[in-house]
Image (tube, helix red, strand yellow):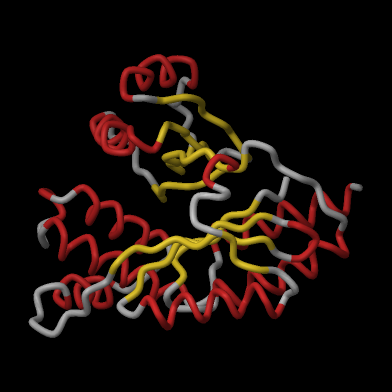
Length: 236
């Protein structure tokens, strides 16, 4: 049981921090944010967050600037956000968020990942109720941090809870409060390492280590796809 727990935790950390081929995904997020809300990070909260997340992954400054500049080009790709839902090995539920300039290609690829693993796509909306969409902010706890005081100060911005893990704090809010939470943390001078909208399973399921290894093979293939921005499951 202990080994399975450690495996699940390692798998989650891998999907949060070490998605394969992360730079193209980060660049795409920056380009999309800049194209939609303008190239000035001070006036575009979504772009500011995308840049922040890229820096947290040690993405070079030149890459970030190139991604912003790409949004101004006449030949800049028209990306759209599309989501797919499916069931994978051992009944695991999977929610796949994509950003693509060719939805025909993307859906064919995602469908292939599911079917190759013995799973299948399900109609969009089928799994929506199985996940709670949250805004998640990751930042370091300092000697000056008073958790009780911080929670009280952030409640008005939509804070639901703060979880501490080895000196790192994760602040959770409803996804609709992403902007107000970002502004509140900035106003307090808190340097956020990462900020993202995340889908959290409301009825997580435990799988054996052997089952997880099979599930992870499918998830790894999905995450290597440049069109796939994030993958969420109901793994406990």
